[in-house]
Each structure stands twice: as C-alpha cells, then as structure tokens.
Length: 475
Image (cartoon, rainbow, N blue to C red; front, side, top):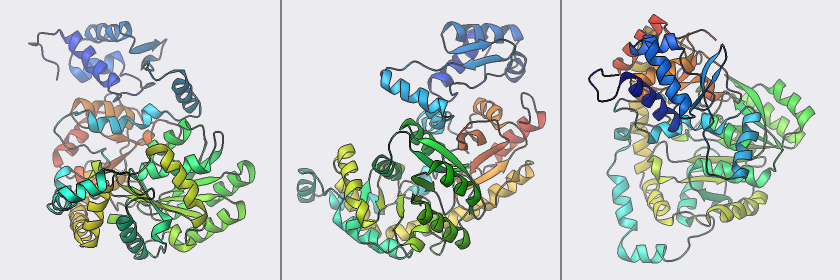
C-alpha cells in the first residue's frame, strides 16, 4: 500500500514497486502495465502520479511505451554473453519465453508476503516437516560413513542401495526394471534434461502437452528444439493432432504427464494409452513419462511405462513434491539400450549425484517412513481440496477439469494476467493460465494449489477484485 507519510513521494513509491517486480521477473518481459487510469484507481492516486511513475520507469530503461497501446516491460540486459542471448531470442521467436516460464520459480525465492501463495507448485513447508528425514541424514553422516562416501566420487548410476529400492518401488506400479537400468539425477527436471540432451539435437521437433508445464516448454526451446503443442484432453492427448505431427514433422520425442497432469489433473485412460503406444511404434518416437506426482496418485492409475515395459518409454520421477524441495533427488528408468548414452550425458553435466542424500532417502523408503508420510499428505490434501473447491465455487469460479490431485484448473471469467498483477498488490502470487501454453496468450484460467487455497481470506480478496472488474477484460 502506498503511504502518504512515507519519506518517498507517491510517485517514487509506485515506480519502486513496479521496478522491484520487473527486476525480480515477477513482471516478465512483454507484460503490459495497467493503463494510467486503471493504475490510478488501483492505488488511489492521481493519474499525474502514475504518469510520473511510468516516466521514471522509462528513464530507468525498465519499460517502453507503444503508441496508443500503453507501457510494456522491456527485456532486461544480462551478462550471459552473446550465445545465451541468441538462445533466448530463438526461444522467444518460437513463442516460448524462458523468463515468462520461470516467473513462478523466481516468485518462490522472492518473498512476496507471508501469505500462502495459490500459484506455488509445492506443498506448504509445514506439511513436509518430519522427524524421520533428519534421523536418516544423521545416520548416514556418522563419521565413518561420511568418510567412506564423501571422500570419493559416488557411483555413476547413483547409489546402488537407492536404485535397488527404487526398482522395488516401481514394481508396485507394475513398472518392472532392474537397478542397473535406473539413473539417479538432481531432481526430475534434471532427468528430463538428460533425456532431451541425449536423444535430441537442435532443430528437432518435440511434442509436448498443452496446457502443460511452462518450464519444460522453455527448457526445450532454449535447447533449440521445435515445440509441437498437443492439446491435452481428459482421457489423454489429442491423438489426431499427434498423428498429423508424425506425418508432417516426424518428431523424435513426446513429453507427457500421464497421472495428475499439470495443470489440469487429468489422468490417462487405458484406451488412449494403448493407441498412443501404437503411434509411437508406428512412427518411431520415444515417450518421456513424467510421473512427478506419483506419491499422491493411485498405484493402479494408467502409466505408459507399465503398459510398454520401458521399450519406447522413459520413466521420470522425483521426491521434491513429497519429501523436500531442496533435496533435489530424481531418477529415470530407461530401456537397456539407452542407459549408457543417458549415463554419458549425466556424467558430462554433473559427474555423480550426492550419495549422502541418496543413502538417506533409501533408508526412508526401506523403513516405510516415506510411504506413511505420503499417506498422511494424501489424507490432508483430500480435506484441503474439499475446502478449496467449495471456496472457489462460492467466489464465482468454475472448474475446467475435475478437481483431483494437487492442482485445480479454474476458470475465473477475467484476464488472469491482469488479475496476477492485482493479486500481487494484495500479497498473493497466482499462476495465470497463459503460463501453461507454449505461445503465451491471454486466458481466463488459472492453476491453483489446493493446499494453499483453503484460506477464505484469499478468496475474499479474489472476489473483491473480480467483482469490481476494474482493469480486467475477458480475453
């Protein structure tokens, strides 16, 4: 809130607020600032104050003006070198902006407020607190164990004990593999990166689900891949669109979240899975199955890797969502013929992975502590989801997909890019629907985290802003 008693003028305060958001990437390049009249109404200041604040932003090189269109955030200069800048420009030309995609990630590190953030992709820290994790770490970091493990490089594939229990865990999902066909990684995102760097070269076409994970779009685009968005439906991908891509572009890879798809929550149907695997065999492409939400999903859910037996599929998962975001332990299970090439890519990027945390995780899995922890999280999430859905419906929202899993795909009826800026003023970070499309375009949808939207205070603010409708339009 702008303060008339502050040592700074209202103009300086307003300019500083926008400048901070631009520099922290909470306002991404290309984002449009509110019109002068809208901004004046939102902050209860005169239009002259807003004009003066926008002039300061212009002088600082943070925004640029487009005649008869308004003020837009300018691309920030970086010190990454000409090659990285060229990559970013290529990704932007492909319709995918890395800085747009990482806006939510940066929001996790840039503390907007102490309020729960509906746009976050993880459980609240208090949900993840446990006693078994610190105990496991203490056990594997005894003096002798610390010397045995830390004074040399770990196993290239990853800790053998962890790979053994992971193979057993995958067996409960009907995904049968050997420990030597599993590679541990620095989180699931690292696993996805290893796969794409191994199987693809710049210019290769890749099929991705849309809506989907913005970071995956941007990561592939930054590597120079051609993004082919496939509409995601309730039962799976649009197979007609995929077939057309296969005939025209001959893609080498398809990236999918079969279970509790992000952001819709959709789960793949058996019929769609069988037809998708037939298409992959017919047109000779691999499928990366990202099962990040496996810990909160039913074991019996349809998974491509189980049906395919890891022939054309590569299974990817991790533990950031259920255990601790900063442990960064992920893994992939691959067809035997791909293990060595994938391992070469891992060794070139990280050498090995942190064996101490891997050993601690193996202990948590072996003793059943992770399974019991996940059961508690699922029970708590079910209750939170019921409360959140009730509040969202009461606030005038509708659900574009059945509310299941961690995320809800909500239709607000207003432009959620504009809503995101208004909610930031109120201390809330939301995830507008445009973030989940390969080519960002205005949307009335937003993704909500059921664990962080069971607070009525958020929905009261949401309702107040959307009822007034000031500064919003229907795309």
